[in-house]
Length: 176
Image (cartoon, rainbow, N blue to C red):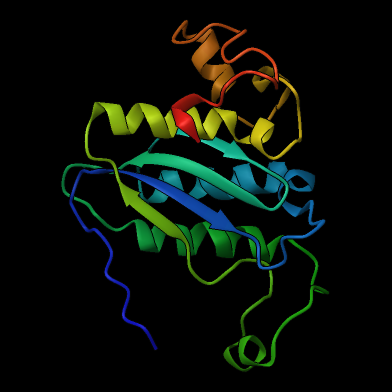
């Protein structure tokens, strides 16, 4: 098995992509958005961290977290979020033999993508990517039309305007 090397800097800011095991046609995350929010709230309460930006799509999510100054353990937080969400979903998903042997569900991909944010430009590019993602995937034509995004909190705080990035035919922020 490959030994993945992950960044483990205490108090750092990280970008994550977390995927459902089954991607095609899966609506699990948006169909159970309240359960996902509940799992996040519980883990944030027990293991504090800050969510700087986030978008939940039907089959995956992207987010930026900032961890406390003395903490680099995002792995445990993700395990708890995934487990908390999975416990609330009725069994019945397709599950591989190896997952069954380990007593795992077939809801989430085992791994996740993580990237330690390097600087302000890197941070802004990832925030833009998060907010643009529903348009990129063809779910909406305007960023503001996707309900499961921190974009709306950014607008409420007057960080970005409601018409940020305009319509689908506009250039994608950050060149992505």
